[in-house]
Image (tube, rainbow, N blue to C red):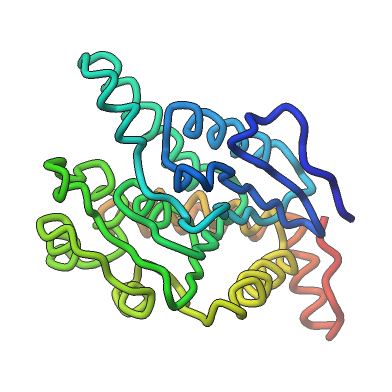
Length: 264
């Protein structure tokens, strides 16, 4: 089922739903989709809408224009030098970034161009990411005298410490193939294969039990922050809950009966 662009969202973000896949598009291509306060608020609202929609099974995060996201809006930041405004900006951005991991649906970053500084952070906080071969990634804030401390939180949870630190202290950009090799993105594909690769990932997820995916995503991020024993305890509780869900019974019966499952 197709749905038109949603009303009520800030015009700097557009959203549409088709066949269980909700595409959220940052729509400030003329500003390289910078994470201004308006963009952050609009993305936060769009993620809330996605989380509340039972028909949305996967979220694709995309950008309009030449870049995926060039990071924070430096002009806006320079115009507000008081500590309270700056702290509010980073607090709001942090909440939005966390929400990418907290909504029940997997989020796929569709990276068609540069993802720098907080834009690279945005990619790192998505559950999955597909990038065109020509895309560039980096923590380039240091080039403007700003150490990318908040972007480092997400990036350092995707790549090794030394690779993250290399990005942080040099400000250099890496290509999509390197980003894939380092673990920042899942795939680097030719430009004409981007949508196909994203659709392949999305359709594979849509075919699975939404209850199991949501339960598993929540547990995955929780166990990452725990010690080994506590992680196994949480995982065991999650598996137990999963096995008691009707979708698990349906899935097992379908597997044994050699038929397609009919998820709730």
